[in-house]
Amino acid sequence: MKQSTKAMLLSALLFPGAGHAYLKHWLQAALLSGAAAWALYVIFSVVLSTALDITGQIESGAIAPDAAVISALVTERLEATEGTTNVATVVLAVSWLAGILGSYWQGRNTEHDTVG
Image (cartoon, rainbow, N blue to C red):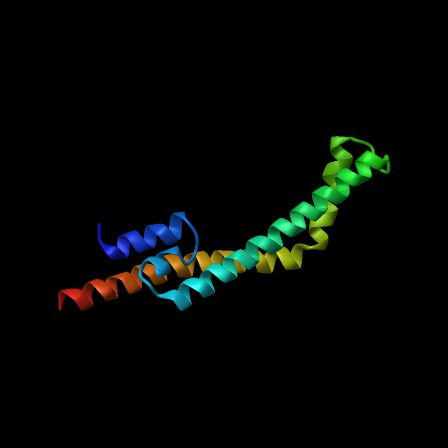
């Protein structure tokens, strides 16, 4: 399997920046991995804090353990953080796509440099 294909698959299936690390492009690997890790942290922290807050309210009896009530509360909380999670989602998608395309492109360049 060609280096470009391996690098692209690593970035696509493992994590953004994995393909760049395979190609020993450390700065790009660190930037893409860092951006993706930040985005995942933001998304997971919003989801986890929402879940913990609602669980605490259910346990304290502040809200009834009713699926419709919980669903409405989750929707309300997630809408309140929509801007933050949208930015994080875009950063994650862009870093993943940049990792896939960039590692393939750099792998192809490496293949052409070693052939010529």
